[in-house]
Image (cartoon, rainbow, N blue to C red):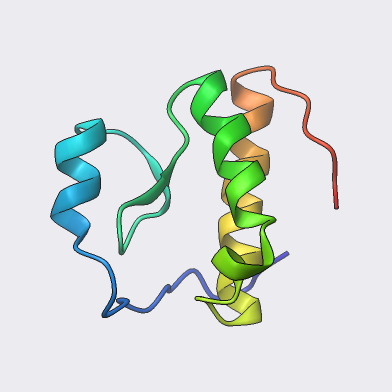
Length: 85
């Protein structure tokens, strides 16, 4: 479990794009507005995307842990079964 809940701002992302595309929803990466986790479909997609090496590589290991923890909590909330890597 991640101990620090801070995710750094990424230079390659515009957080307003995530808000514009998905609205005012919960994101696993709240800083950059990436990986929406407000619906079962978004939870499954977020889990799939963060487990792609190229996507995870944009974060440090602790940040990936934070994002995965948030997705796992959202999966429980939305009654979604996800496979741990």
